[in-house]
Length: 102
Image 1 (cartoon, rainbow, N blue to C red):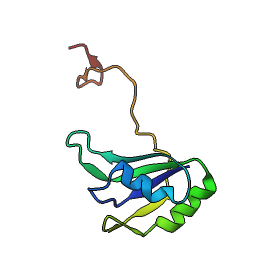
Image 2: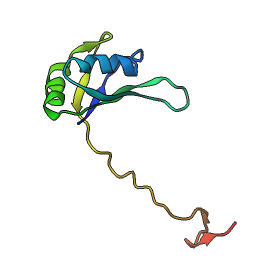
Image 3: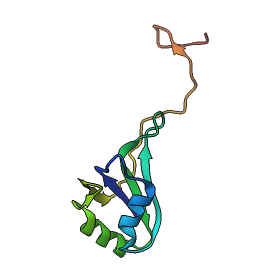
């Protein structure tokens, strides 16, 4: 089960959130999401646990608990919505709506 962990302290690391969840069962992976330009934490992350019942217990127990001085938000992660990207050819459109080769 994939678990969303929000409202993380900017000091939180992958290891920090892994340790918080390990007391509830086996943690397959733990990752704090970072800004790709600055490398700073974006304040949320994901934890993956292999046993669903252990993951549910972790969610119920850790939601609202303090981690590094901030109350964290813990929920089952939802699948990402389609971002609406299209795989079309590049190029500029002219005013008539046709593609311009240049």
